[in-house]
Length: 349
Image 1 (cartoon, rainbow, N blue to C red):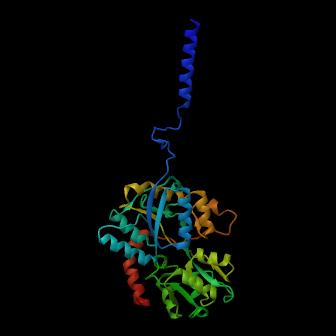
Image 2 (spheres, rainbow, N blue to C red):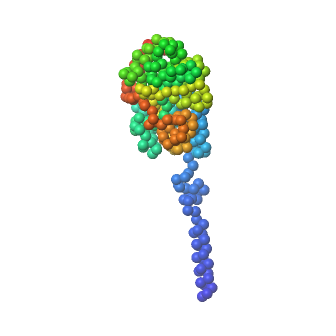
């Protein structure tokens, strides 16, 4: 009897050990950990953008460091060139792009109207102001950029405060803009100015033409030339003079008193993305709003969507900046007419 009891107890002990050796992490026996919510995200993303290549690459590398199962390819050019590449590909039957990120909100809306944008709304945007998110998940601002006035501090003793201040004879032949025929940000600025005719309007552009305003193809060229003193003042996106000033260039900038123009540059997922890459694309959108990445945007000179990320820095928050009213419907409905009038005044080059 005693031997029998010992045998029973021994068997119970063996079963207990076997039970304890079973995994509690959902392992389904295939060695992949099962569906535990922590499985590695994989995919390959092709990104088309007009954003500065060095800054975009820094951000994408941070994303792939956090998600080593994801790889990416980047096509970077000016907004016009990116749109031309997209148009050519779409007319041929499809695009390689999975993610698009550039400054032409009207073009994005047109793609969305054609069913070419994959709608996705990450939880992080629930508290974003309505001006920074578009068309029920079409896309969102992941950081903000604004058109401002930058000036060379060795050339300008009485800094401008508003748009009209750079249309005087003091700025004859030494003030410059980015050409809206090439720059999406410049075209958005043009539309914002024309929409707010009481604040800027066509009169402002005619006044600039009268003092021999110069045109450059890119904001980057404007930033370089105002820092060198070739131009005394330029209309440029805000992060460029902020970074130049930080690096020691004789440059400062102002958000115009009547309002800066916010340049919509939503990050959008293309509807034709392969199913195997959708999770990676969503992960990228979500990554954009993480605290660490918002702080990276601040380090790059951008205004973050998460204002806490700018705390303790000289970067303003979206709440700090006076912005001109901007009506997206006005943009979509009047873009062609505005571009035609600009060409009439300044020419097509």
